[in-house]
Length: 405
Image 1 (cartoon, rainbow, N blue to C red):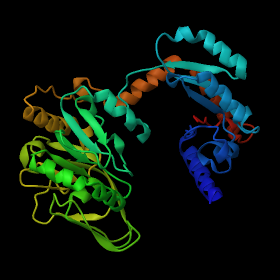
Image 2 (image 1 turned 45 degrees about the vertical axis):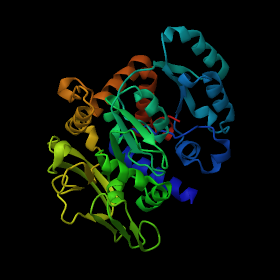
Image 3 (image 1 turned 90 degrees about the horizontal axis):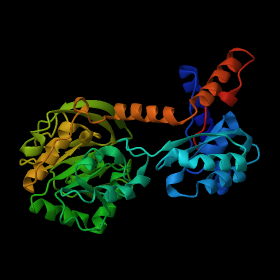
Image 4 (image 1 turned 90 degrees about the vertical axis):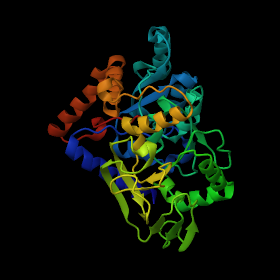
C-alpha cells in the first residue's frame, strides 16, 4: 500500500512539474522519524525517489535548535543525508545578529550552510495545522466577547474562525465541557459527521446547546455542524458504514441524507437572506463548500441564497459555507451583535482597503519577510541548475525542488 501511495505522490509531482517547471515539496512532521522510515512518504521515501535538495527548517522558538539540526542529520539514512543542502533557523525573537555565533557553530558541527535566520513576525497567516489550536485560547483570553467553538474529535477547516479571533476570545471547547458563559456557540466542520455527533451526544453537548438556546445565545453550525443541528441524519451507510437514522440536536428543523458517495466541492458567493440581526447585516459573502450529504430545510427560511437554514429569529442558523467568517462583513455582523448584547463598544474589522491584511496580502508579506532574511541566491541557483540539466545534459531531478521537512 505504501508503494502505491508513493507512486501516486510521484505522479502528482511529475504532473505539476510538467505544468509549472519547478516544484517545492514540503515535508510533514519531523524529518528523522526513524521508526517510520519504511513508510514515510512525505519525507524520506519521496526524497529518496526524487533526489531533491533538502532544506531543514528548525524552530528556534521552542528551544534546542542545535539538537534539532544536529540530531536530525545524524539520524537521517546515509543515502538521504548528502541531499541536505541547507538549514534555515525560523522564529528567532530579537536581533538576529545575536545569533551570528550560533550560525557559525551550526555550520561547524554539521558542515551544512545556514541559509538564513528568520525573525518571528506577526503576520496574520492561517494556522498551518490543527496542532495550533492549543495556543489559540491563550492569545485571545483577555477579550470580553466570548465565542465557543466545539472542538470536535475530527475537526476540519479549523481556520474558519481566525478572523473572529482577532476581536473576540475564541475558545475551542472539548466535548463534555460546559458551554455556559459564552456569548455565541459554533459547531464547526468535521471529517465524519455521524461519529462526531455520537461523541457529542454521549458527552451531553446536546443539552448544553439547548440551554444556550434558551438563554438566547446564538448557535451556528458550519457544514457538518449544520447537519448536527438538524432533526435527523439519514445515512445509507456512506458516512458511518452502517445504514441508519441518527438523531441530531434538533435546534433546526432540517433533515440531512447521505444517499451516495458524492462530494460537493465548489467555490460560492452568496447573499445572506435569513432573518434576524446577524444574517440581515451580512450582505454578500463568499466561501467554499466541501461536504457529503444533502440537507432539506423544510419550512425554515434559507440562511443564504441557495444554502443553509435559520430559525425565524435568526439566532440559530446553519450553512455549508466554509470561510463564512473570513468575510469581514460576516465577522462584523456577528461581533457587532454580540458586543451590543454585552453593552460593549465594537470597532469593525476592516476589509483589505481598510488596511487589514487579507490572505493574499499576508502571503505577500510573508514572502517579502522570507526573502529579506534568507539567501535566495543559493536557492534560486538550484532551480537554474535544474533547468540547465533538463535542457542540456538530460534531466536530473536533484535540483528540481527542495524539501522543507
